[in-house]
Length: 233
Ligand code: CA
Image: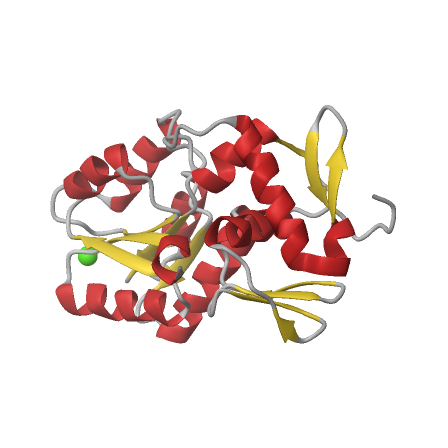
């Protein structure tokens, strides 16, 4: 189940050696890199395939990274996309311009791949926690996004792909209620046509997999489901 669940990172960088180094950094934190070398290619790709995060170089051959960033922020569909700007410029004015234009973070070249990887992970954790590769813990449950395993009281449990994704999403947003419709959209994706009651089936299976920790998945009558460490069902 590994590949499906990895966060997809779009790399927009025209220098092949640097693009390769960034891809390495992205892979090393368990994400899937997709690299393009122009703003035009990046825009075309964004229109039909939404990544989870963009690593955007400032100097590109056809258009500046800053221009592409402002197009992203003006688009209703892409507005919320997490973006980290990359640049050789260490000039403070450029950094401010990038952040003013809506960059979420900023990395100056030359960068260390480990630092870049850590920043990618930190931004994912902040913006879309269910796509982050950090270990998630709640009480006796530990979910490891790198190995895609779940342990309850240090014992690995048998869990299906859909139940794993559902648990990961709910654990990433504890104490928040989600409707069946929201869960379908967030966990299965809005392009998949499945009925709302399918969610109930997967919740049932998830509770079964969690055994005596099944109470962590709460049913909120008429609303939906919530992950909560509270004891009451
Ligand atoms: Ca460049």
